[in-house]
Length: 612
Image 1: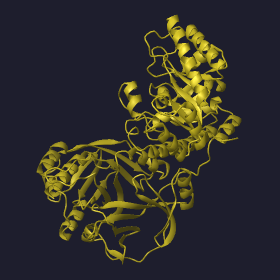
Image 2 (image 1 turned 90 degrees about the horizontal axis):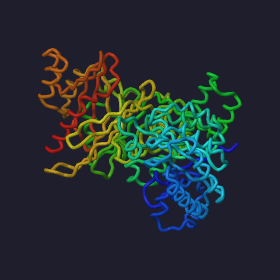
Image 3 (image 1 turned 180 degrees about the horizontal axis):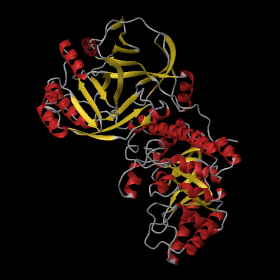
Image 4 (image 1 turned 30 degrees about the vertical axis):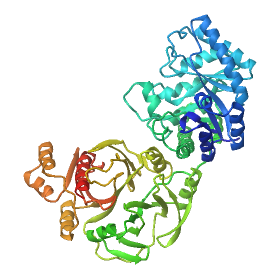
């Protein structure tokens, strides 16, 4: 049995219709929904669009949307049917036989179920005359029909072979409606399935839908549950994405299409795992039904389980200021080569390489996984280009994250290396790495680290910066062996001699004694970031710390956060180019990343930028 067709609505991508179609095909989609506005605003005729899709290997599987069909006014309804005839003629020229019909938002929309079913039947008869079908969808803000169960009931009562229903995960989940009811819908009545995720926001559903939808796996909605229930009900049609998002509308279409296709593959992996759980529990499905659904899902190697970082690579500015900072901290050099300098601490390597750039950055991470070959195979299936690299003295496979950071899959157990000197006293290893993302890559990066990197998302944060808000998303492995924090910082133009910054990146090292670490760094002459006395006065008022504790932290530039019984102590070096180092101590199970302190650190860094 063939696997499910992957599809995307052209409204989900930026650009002209030709650009959208090319991006969808390059990303690996097999079909597209044609959004009416994309066709009407373009220069190509319907026949030219049809032929171009055929050349690209894309099937047109839906034309959408047809709005406000039903009406209590007989004359208006007759005019709507006449409008539909023109659309069906257009669809014939496009080579598509399925139209999406949205529930009406007009004030004269039909409220009586019998009348609505009768008007859908009339629409079905017109569609059948043109060799077409209609899929009736409940908009979450429909005048009378805002529930998928009501829409499905109306389509069923229409009792016409050309009338079915379309399920849309956003319209279902945004209103908190239980998707279990999908299992009660006859599979042959489900003509189409549209999928979209979204962050959970406390706002009206219409602007939520129009501006904040995202691809499955990038938000907080149970999209796998909706999709899996549709398959269990008997649906075997396309998995199609319909996403309205302000950022996606501005981002390059090929980048968005890549992320979109990856999200559908990752969704099928999540559905397969959900299916296995249902099989184990024996809930509401026979073994035959589960086998049928499993056969429709694309088999993908399981996500890796990261076991730690093997190395961090950094691009250094000319003159090696970042290497000088690592030296000053006290890391012991392991080797020097013509194109790189390396340090080693315990089982983690740090390397810098000089590049022709004026901003230093984190350029690569080595992630330990139990089976590097399987992790690489999964990455390739999820649309990543595999790169052969030589690292840690052996040939390995790597991929590039959306921001360009090279991620190398390393064995969980690595060969022992000779000791490299004393190193930094009290250092336990890498706590986390923070990577600044281009504004249009943030959602794609979270999906990458989830689907390809095997990390889970923690609750996101918006952090105040002197020039805007920093959007921050922490990603961790289940045992916290690997933690990556993704940030989008506001870009500010040059002002008062301050350099332009798109944000900084950093490596956070964990220590068992932050005070001793601060003393060590001060003895080494490492330039530390100071936030000012106002912070410490507020700290004392907030937590009622002892005077001597606050003074001990203030004199060493240590910042403190407490959540419950847990405490987080942190200090920062000044920024070199685009990178700084952080040192943290976790006490009594503190699990966060010091979000309370981030605004003070950002303000201090902004002041340091002005002084520089």
